[in-house]
Image 1 (tube, helix red, strand yellow):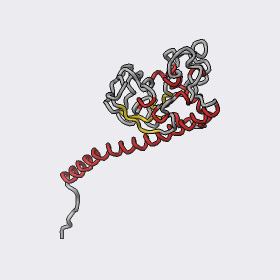
Image 2 (cartoon, rainbow, N blue to C red; image 1 turned 180 degrees about the vertical axis):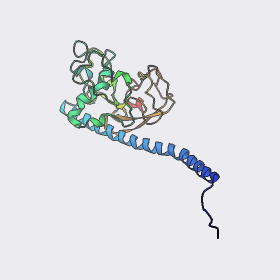
Image 3 (cartoon, rainbow, N blue to C red; image 1 turned 60 degrees about the vertical axis):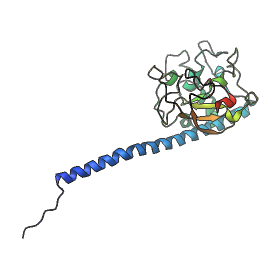
Image 4 (cartoon, helix red, strand yellow; image 1 turned 90 degrees about the vertical axis):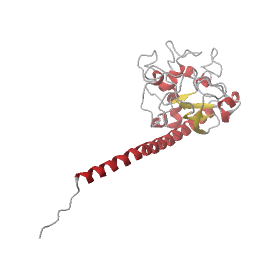
Length: 246
């Protein structure tokens, strides 16, 4: 008696492979979105811890925030007293961790897990006049808002004295820190900043990024080009303060 040999035919194998490929094409984007959502949650946690650290710093310094002019070797000949166009870079390239690490004891929270380390705003450069300063070469994902760093007005001496809480009229609507780019969605820097490739790209309307507010809360902030005072040639560092941020 002849035995029957059970096996898959070539057509059956091809059908199974095609089904697996279709399922993979459907599920991989879902998995990627789930992973990015988890990373966004980590980023929110990072920002919350930084906000608490900022609050502790202020308690130690008469309710005042820090400012880039307080950094050692802040410019070619020492700390600058007025904005020189590189305040943002100094803070993003290591200034923020310099001020806040004593209150966090954790360098990991200064980097979003979705931040691949691209050279936003020249934060990784080694050719700045302050590239050998003690605070440099510790780049962070998060901007300390330049308007606060400049004493809300950018006048002479504004970067040598931090903003005090009483100067903020709407703490619950005033952003203090935010991501350098929309890392969890379209992966583009906030327009107005320096793109790592050298050419700013206009992100789609309604981009989202993690932001911290002066009253201590953090959230995923959704920004549209049609809201009051927004100009696509500016960035979140200079968007009007207070209730205009909402």
